[in-house]
Image 1 (cartoon, helix red, strand yellow):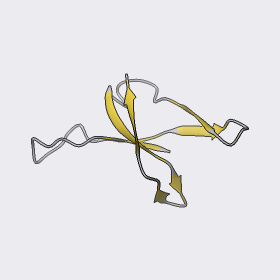
Image 2: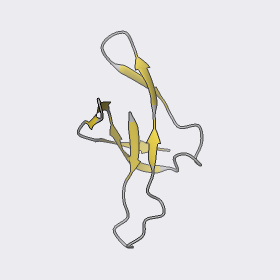
Image 3: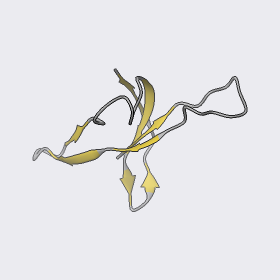
Image 4: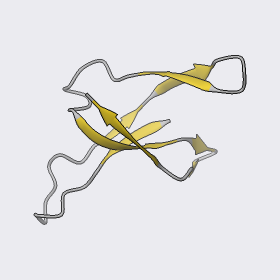
Length: 67
């Protein structure tokens, strides 16, 4: 799993762009549970696209808000 911060549309350089690996495990019923990033230095608050990778192929993103 990975979180990708939404890009900026106002500048040619986006210093807030991020890719954050997310640790996950099976919940035993066909779903997944994950652990959020440890602090705001790793993932500042805001909207992120959540991807699940399958052999390097990303899923369609779901939007999640990190508080």
